[in-house]
Length: 309
Picture 1 (cartoon, rainbow, N blue to C red):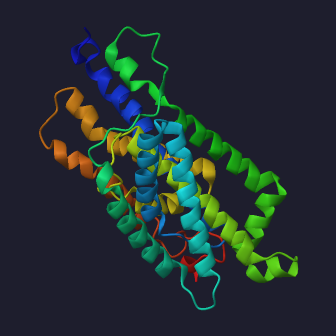
Picture 2 (cartoon, rainbow, N blue to C red; picture 1 turned 180 degrees about the vertical axis):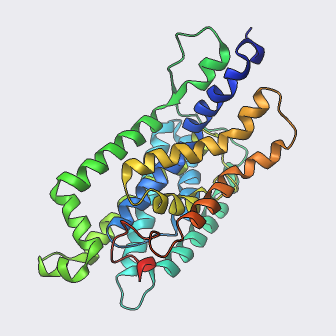
Picture 3 (cartoon, rainbow, N blue to C red; picture 1 turned 90 degrees about the vertical axis):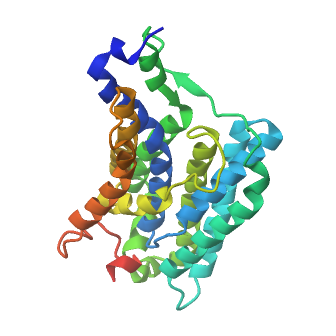
């Protein structure tokens, strides 16, 4: 049987690569959902609650139905409902979308913790993975290249959204509504409806990210399953300059930071091991500081976002 010594220090980048793919997937879905929502001119800080509620819903439905993919669908529907409710509340005059997002985050977490208590112990079916390391006889290579289909679906979504924003009528409508409500109304568009649908779609993507957490990695339901990934995704979108493909690469960067500790442990580096778990949070803080310049922080931001006013 292969050991870490079989591949030596090559095990570190390999483990980071495999870990980056595993850890980045929820970041990818939540950031794409937030990117879609923010490009319509609305910020949704409630995606942390949507992520957790999606994780609980997906796990519960997968356990009761015996189908992990049905759990993913249920999580997407739950996220869409959260997004629809958020978008409906935000249409009223004087409502602040940031405050509503925080309220939705607390609501999602509270509902998930309440309804999810019976599902902490039961074991639901896992999402299947694609063995891209079949060509190697080394177990570490095979484990690192076990890729979940949701990662590939998320990458496809990033390409699709990039194309949609650049080359389709729907993308043009989202960009116009996100940049100027007055211009959108002059074109005969309904900004509230567009933002409602964009927030619902963004919530659905965040729900899928939650299902990945509970049904694949780490692959269980508990109240701390998200570790703040929904909130970190907001910083990720700013860092990615509201570009879906940049969200993909930024998600991999965050995923690599999250995989650093386990990768070092796999080659015997145990001193200060727990400090490496803080890497994603340190990276988030560093990116927020690096992008806080008054001249550069909001480059590429939709004009109607609350954080630009």
